[in-house]
Each structure stands twice: as structure tokens, then as C-alpha cells.
Amino acid sequence: MLGIAIVGPEGTGKSLLFELLTGTAPQERTLSDTFTPPVGTVSLPDSRLESLQQILKRPKYVPLAVEVKDYPGFTSGTPSRLLNRILPEIKQADLLLMVVQGFSVAEAERVLKATRAFGDELLILDLAIAENALKKHQQRLRGTKKPEQDARYKLLSRVAELLEASKLLHNELTTDEKKQLRDLALLTLKNQLIVINVDEEVYAKEELREGISALISEEVGTSHIIPVKLAVEFAELGDEERDEFRQLYGINEPLVPPLKRSILKALDHIVFYTFNEKELRAWSIPAGATALDAAGAIHSDLAQGFIRADVIPAEEFISAGSEKVAREEKRWRTEGRDYTVQDGDIILVKFNR
Ligand SMILES: Nc1nc2c(ncn2[C@@H]2O[C@H](COP(=O)(O)OP(=O)(O)OP(=O)(O)O)[C@@H](O)[C@H]2O)c(=O)[nH]1
Ligand SMILES: [Mg+2]
Image (tube, rainbow, N blue to C red; front, side, top):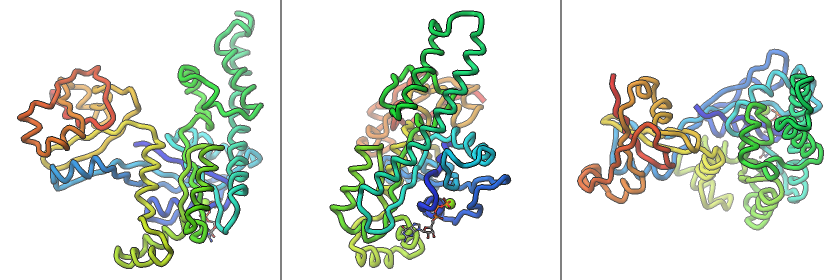
């Protein structure tokens, strides 16, 4: 299952965001020697899946489920014994949800400053990782060749230099270089979504809201602005009451579905679909994965006994309008194990039991 780590400075509403996404308030809140993060799941529906369900009407309908963990606020100055309880796990996450705060009618500049400051904390932590890796690599090279002639040495030195100069690795490195650094799981190379938690007053002022959000997105990284506390309060209400309250606050659209869409996008994974008589389900795999990988994501038996995959893009299935028409028009393609799965494919795996 894909995993999301909620991180950020202290007291920015991370635990409230966890509650909003998972429906339960987290138990553990403070970082200690015995800390383990609260874990929950969030389902991320997407519009293609909804359209498919309108056609297929399966008894069970399962959107993509993602694991969410709530971490306490930290900085690079947090004692390393405590950081070591959480950083190895955070490094495994597929997405960092970075929560920053602008509770009061605060100016955009203050939110920007706080966001940058937390970004710098991640840079410092990464610098320690890079320097450590460089030292180890240098020891390994000792006596064999000059470090300056070694590609990995050169890459690691450059990474350390970039981090030292507060440069964002995302912008400075090539895709290939990023791939070579994957084993280090650098925090600043992870998929990130900045969640700007504002209060209802800020949120209700469209110009202010969009100003803050545009500034953060341009200067730091992709962001999503949401009044988290208000959204949690809305979630406790029935549908009708919620609509009434929303209007009272001058908020015209629902708050949670757009947040989930932003999260799905930031995860940067391909979504594919499967169905049988009983259920329609969404799955995820990294971009570039094959039909065999997709089969393996569903069940190892499917990968082991893989014969072929019947594939149709969800959009085509939806435009055909029914299972029958899609079959008759022969829109399904037969693909082998090496087929590169495309975002939105419906995949039916044929396999030997
Ligand atoms: N007024 C207001 N208060 C908020 C908002 N979001 C969070 N808070 C309050 O801020 C405090 C911290 O919220 P948490 O969700 O516990 O923050 P956190 O980021 O998990 O905090 P740590 O885990 O201690 O770093 C709580 O008292 C919340 O009620 C908001 O949008 N508006
Ligand atoms: Mg918390």
C-alpha cells in the first residue's frame, strides 16, 4: 500500500489533518523514546472510478486506499535519538504531506517564511545523510582509485554542495541522477504536497486564499490550502447541515474531495482498475511499471501464473458506455507481461492457478 507521512513544524494542525483524512483522532502525539506513529487509511476516490461504477454497478466499489501516519513536529535540532525513531520511517513514505499554518488572518509572507524554514530543516537533515554517504563511499574507494575519477563520489559531492547552498535537488538533478540516489531516500527528493492550514476567516477571503496558495506554490512547491479545523467540524455533521454551515461561512464547495485529488496527484503514481462480478477496484503502481508488476500488485499468484492481460483505457470503456459495447467494438487489447501500464488502464489478468 502507498504510504503518506504527515510532517511539519510543531503545532500546525498535523494531527487534525490526520483526523480529517482517516476519520479518527490520533492517540500518540508527542515524540518520545517509545514513540510509534498513529496509523490510519484514507481512500482516494477518483472521477474515472466513479464513472466506471456508474456503468458496472458492482456490489463492491473500492477506491485506492493509502496508509497515513501522523508524526509530531520536528526540526534538525531535535535530539538525534528521537529523530532516529521517526526519520527512517519517514524516508520510506511515498509522499510527504507538509503541514504549515496560518491560523489567523496572517499575511502570506509569514506562511511563506514558515514553509521555507521547514524546507530548510529537511535540507539540513539531507545534508547529514549525503555527507555520511560520501564519507562511507570514500572509505570504500580508499586505495582503489582517485575519488575525483569515481562517478558516485562526484555525484554525492555535488549533492552535498547543492544542499549546502540551499538548492532544491528536485530542480538541479537529472532524472537519472535522482534514480542513482534512490537508496539514500533523501527527504527533499520525495514527492511533497504542502498543506496550508488556515482558519475560516482567511479561507473565506478568496483573494487572500489564492494569494497565499499561489505564493507558496511558486516559491516552495505544490500546495493545497484548506481550513483543517473547520473541515473536521464539517465532517461531524450530516450532509444537509454541512451544506448549510458551509454557506454560512461563505464556502461554496466541499473541502475534502479537492484535498484528496491534490494528494492523489502529488503521489505521482499510475492508477489502474480491475473488476470482476463482485467488485470494481482501483490500484496503484509507479510510473513505468509493467503488466506483470500490475498482476503482482494484485496478488503474487497472478504474477506467478501470468498468461496475458486484457487491457482497455478507462476513458474508452466509459465512452463505450457498457461492458457489452466495449466487447463488441473489440476495444480490449491483449498485452503480454512486458506491456507498460498506462494511467487509467483497466486490466484483467488471465493466469494459471
Ligand atoms: N484556530 C485554529 N486552531 C487550530 C487549527 N488547526 C489546529 N489548531 C489548533 O492547534 C493546536 C495544534 O493542532 P494539532 O493538530 O495537534 O497540531 P500538530 O501539528 O499535530 O502538533 P504537534 O504534533 O504537536 O506538532 C490544537 O490545539 C488545534 O486545535 C486551525 O485551523 N485554527
Ligand atoms: Mg500532532
